[in-house]
Every structure is written in C-alpha cells, then in structure tokens.
Length: 208
Image 1 (tube, rainbow, N blue to C red):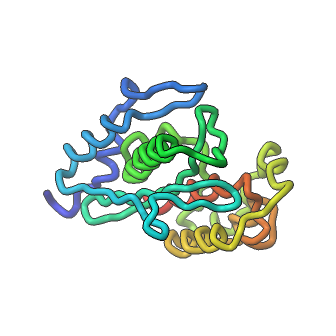
Image 2: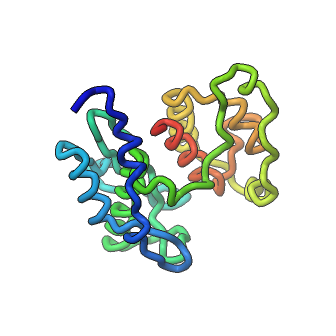
C-alpha cells in the first residue's frame, strides 16, 4: 500500500459499536474483535506485553500496572493500564486472572491509539492545542470542578513523573498548559487520581 495512506484514519473509520460490551456501567470493546480488525487492516501488526523485572506487571505502592505496546505499519504506541476490578477500582492484591484481564483491556486501548474504537474513550483528553501559535497562547479551558476535587491527597511518584515527562517530550506538548489545566506548578504536584487521565490524554495526542 502507498505510504500516503492514513492508516489511523482507516482504523478510526471502522464502526465497532456492535462489539462493545457493557460491564458495571462501563464500555469495553471485545479484544478478539479488536485484534481481528487490526490484523485485517495490517497483517504484520504485532504487540508486546512489557516486562518489569521479567514480570508482566509493575507493582507499586499506588497499585499494579500493566503496559502493552502495539505496532501498526511500523509505528509503535504503548498504553499503561492499572489492574482494576469490575467497578474500575484498583486491586491491591490482584490474581493472575485479574492481571490477564487488565492486559487484554490494555491491548484494546493500545490498539485504540492507532484509531480502532478510539471514540469509545472520547472525553478523557485535554483541550486540543491548535496549530496556530496564537491559539497555543490562548487561555486554556476552565478546569472541571470534578477534576479540581481530585487533586487533593497523594501526588504521583518519581516513576509516574518520568512517564509523564517522557510522553510530554514525545508528543511535543506544552508542559505549562498541562500543569495549568490541572492546577499545579510542577509534574511532581500532579495528584495520583489524575495520573491515568494525563497519560491517556498525552498518548491520544501521540496517536493523532
């Protein structure tokens, strides 16, 4: 296929609505369907479950996380996902089944970064930064009151700070806008409750 083909546009144009499953009030895309559509679009597409000291998960004092990287047409995008229960709450001591389930969810979200089913997760990203320099200097949209309440309590650890800083650098995002949106002065002040929202937002920018 020609290099001019926009593979993200092709995948994002696929209607996945009939394959969305509802659990506990949340929407999930069937992972077998996501994988089949991905391989139909790109037979060479592949994915990798990232390892942490030879383990397929990372245990921290904030919870357990998994990471999956998906490569489509030579572009690799990764997604970090916490191990959650049926109500999307972190599991402090997950079983092998819990970790496997989270890996599958993480795989689907990593595929979504390439376009397939991305609209399912709409509404989690930050205000878009315009290509016009004047737009970039504009005052960001008011921070939602619900988000403001989440900033109280514990702040992210050094590992999470490095993850955000890496994504900011990779996406060319203006860090001051991110900090202003979350009402903090430095990455170290970002609340634990906001961590995944920041990561998802930046990874969506990288996929766009």
